[in-house]
Image 1 (cartoon, rainbow, N blue to C red):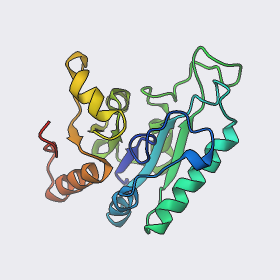
Image 2 (image 1 turned 90 degrees about the vertical axis):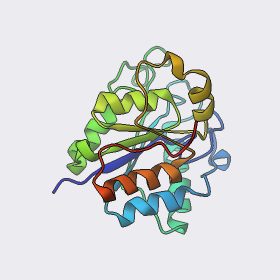
Image 3 (image 1 turned 120 degrees about the horizontal axis):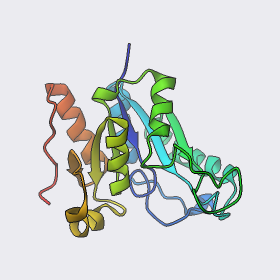
Image 4 (image 1 turned 180 degrees about the horizontal axis):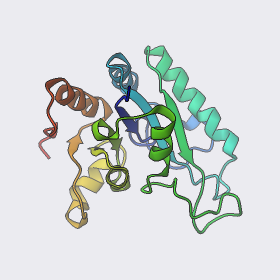
Length: 203
């Protein structure tokens, strides 16, 4: 049976935005992240991380560092009784670096390759699924993958929403203060059978 998923951006959404994380000690998970992910776990929704990590292509860190950072994330979530069902990342950049990392791939957001891969791996109900992120590119990823988009105002989100949204071709389906607020809104709508979700912020 197909299951719905919430795809979650990493930096700025489930953890603090600090630029390129070139050491695990610089990685900071938001204090509300475990509660948000546990809500999805308890509702039998898939919680899947989707992140661009072009620092590999740029030579800022080795690909192995991504695994070390994600181990920190998994440990932090586990302390709150939560878990991610999968992590998908893109280490590529279309114009920077050397092969195999300099690559015009289909997995770099906002292209939908990572979500498409996850949908095949987990038999996901994309019609019921969401992408949550703090950048317009995350909302465009959702549109390209045929799922709904939630923009959070953590990370880059508030600046993008307040100063750049007039130039956006498409608007997100939901705007929320942070990951926890977004998940609450999505779960409330799913529980009531609603296809539309009211933004959880007055902005």
